[in-house]
Amino acid sequence: MLTKPNPSSTTLYSSANEIESHVVRFIMAEKNIEKDIFNIDINKMPEEILELNPCQSLPTLFDRGIVLYDLSVIMEYLDERFPFPPLLPVDPIEKSEKRLMIFRFTRSAGCWFELANTIETGSKKDAEEARKILKSNLIELVPLFAYKPFFKSEDMTVVDACLAALLWRLKKLGVELGTPGKAVTDYAKRIFSRASFKESLTDCEKEYN
Picture 1 (cartoon, rainbow, N blue to C red):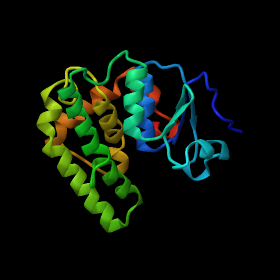
Picture 2 (spheres, one colour):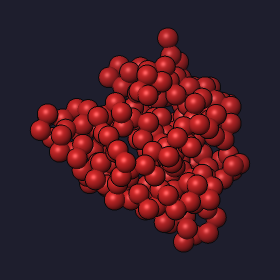
Picture 3 (tube, rainbow, N blue to C red):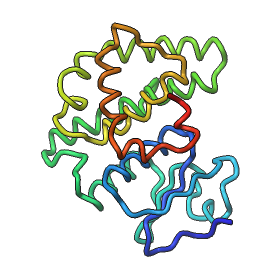
Picture 4 (tube, one colour):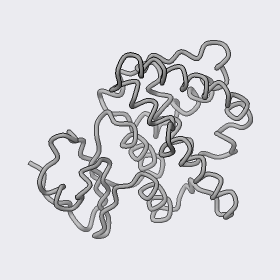
């Protein structure tokens, strides 16, 4: 039975198969953060958690007495709270660029995370349309995946954490990039080979590839 988190520890409540939760677990593993992770069913969130997060959403992070439950806020908090290795640039212009990428991929209307959710939960017609759009969008950005070791960067950033969680699910989502998407596939393999990414996977997520 779950209880309220220990105020002296960093505690993450996440979904075992939900994409945003995977992003946060990856970031925490990359930073080698000492933490307690509890994977729970979003439809059966314990009262103890609902009292602290009225939005009834996952992931939910508890640390130093605060409660965070927005993906972007959680990512930036973790990067500032645990600064090594840094996953956001110091330069304000570069940092703003990364923030815009995250917004585009995870939160804007018709974003990639939304498309992935539509493929999994939408009608057959909507899922097929979302699948085509996601494939087209990924292939359209092939030059950016091939440009540097990470996405438009020499070093890993939170943008890569978001992309990795999405790309890991492509097979499960029925999105085949083929030869035109080779640069995306190669990029994904580099990210997937990281020890921190492997550590971030739940048992059910390991079955996606």
